[in-house]
Image 1 (cartoon, rainbow, N blue to C red):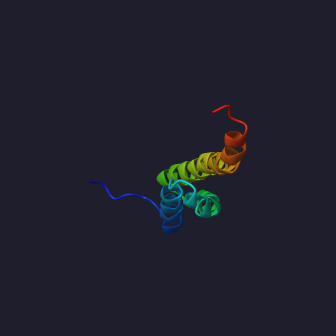
Image 2 (cartoon, one colour):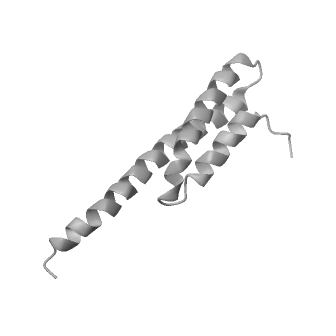
Length: 90
């Protein structure tokens, strides 16, 4: 297996993105994934052979953004369910 060219910042951003997948509680980790993904992207631009780092940083940044929107949708549904249940016909 070839060695992977991933920096510590990018690996931490990926870990934050994975932890952000936990429903409702994961919203805590979304800002970390976004921030560290952006920092990893900036650091990858300085390096000469940072193609894998850049791809990994972009993936962490994109996943963090998508997961943040999904988490916000889940929280919105959580607060709307009681209102919807009061208006139901059953």
